Image (cartoon, rainbow, N blue to C red; front, side, top):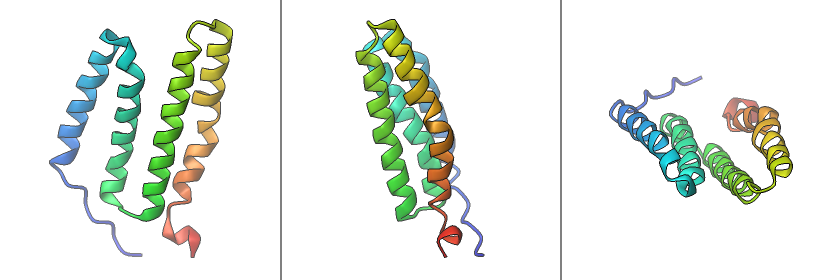
Length: 114
């Protein structure tokens, strides 16, 4: 097994500060909250990609970004229907990702595929 190259140090603190500021500001502009959460989540995952760039990991991150954007858009659209919105958030944003995201990340490792 070859050692992974270390993450670029300047990227992580800048990204973390930007994400923290965006997430703090997002509740004051509710219409932008789904977009900010999506971008912040994907940017946090991109730190893993910066450390271990690979096509499978890129595809997993793109898939996660698409799922999160669709899930948050659905929650936003169902905000007027309390039970439907709650069910959507619990199932699509909470229960489905619990097994899917770790499995998807596991699928990106080369050792598993060989």
